Length: 162
Image (cartoon, helix red, strand yellow):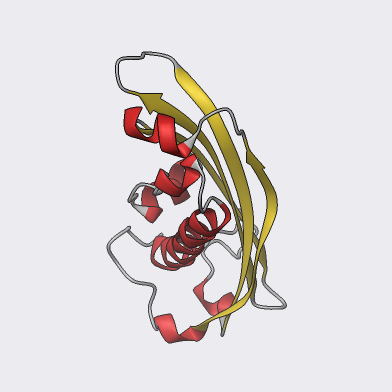
């Protein structure tokens, strides 16, 4: 198997094509006001989940990401459930079968260089989507944290604290 730092042989980023990006679920809890509570906002805690589905015949990778956001107010230990978003981003990767690991009856997975790249692209797209949907609300302060997409790829669940 490829190591996280070794690129898949022959893989180039320009082989990836965005096919679709969509929000599959969005929830915003309106009990925090940007004007009043925004000044007391210390940050957000994030629960991030990811999954990838691969259609080898169609050379398609579907990346699903979910994030639950909890606001942290200065001087308070309780986290306030603020919202959640789930997205699905679909990519096409030219020559996908040649990059797959474990095609000999083993479980099939993407090399970390490719899986991390598409997951990073999907996560960055979600970041912009969340800021757009949350404009004018407390969620406009919820900048998704910088994460290592290869770590998300391996764990599929991450907790990031404010």
